[in-house]
Image (cartoon, rainbow, N blue to C red; front, side):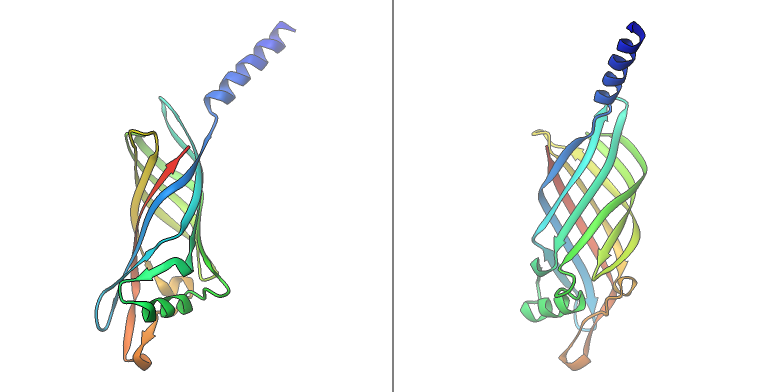
Length: 188
């Protein structure tokens, strides 16, 4: 009986030491940069939600889940409403109103919460097409305990079956390549 109690106590301590804490996305900046035959363009995603689960035990950070959801109709372009409409149409927003990222694997994490670099893999869904992507993110814990992650990723629209938008009856075309730059702040 004493061995059973000792085993239960030891197991409880191990589980508590490895318990994942859930964090909610409380602030974000997501910027899309692209090109066209006329000029470069930028769009911001203004509605982003998400959560992550992680733990930090003196011996290192363990990230177990990340789920991010972006509202396609919240994308606002520096080129105005015509560009926004073309973006919504290209992203098939009526049938796919969300862009999502779901963590599938942590390839590496180095550093501590004060200065962290992680290489992760996940499923990115854009316009109804899901593809595996790798991301390198930097992380740091703020004075209030919140954790901020940031990074960028170059993508081809056609990888996600998105036809690059055209304007003025096809006279102006956007490039296939876009760069997504993001920062996300998570709080317990």
